[in-house]
Image 1 (cartoon, rainbow, N blue to C red):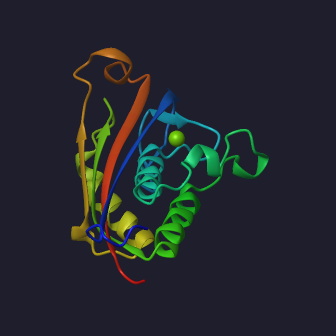
Image 2 (image 1 turned 90 degrees about the vertical axis):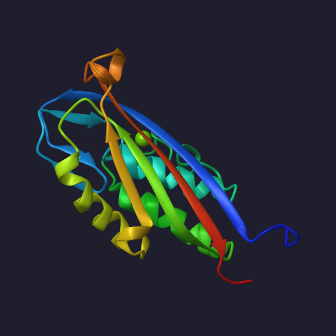
Length: 166
Ligand code: MG
């Protein structure tokens, strides 16, 4: 990575999934009680996918879809924590470490607020961070569009990295 630049990198991640009837809803590494679930090839954890892409993007690595194709048998029902771990390994390989990350979940239901601390704790554990390095907030779709009608869920994440070594 170019040494004449400040020792910082920023990454942006986005993901969305269709929702199906019946829960639980896997998001942020935990299973929430819900009347919907996220549909995908892996465990369809939209938040961990967005964070994984933010980390990978910050060091210009291939994105989650390139590293873990959704037509590969080994990725079926796979725990997205494994994708996130691979992204962490890759940023460390670049000599970088996480300053903080911030996320937005876009979902009509269930209510995310009661579960945000548990998600922050889970993600901090997966990334070897303090809980106050992980921000998560949630917005509804105000009843509008595919998110507002609970046909889809989405998440955005930004991450800031600093050079830890090298
Ligand atoms: Mg995804």
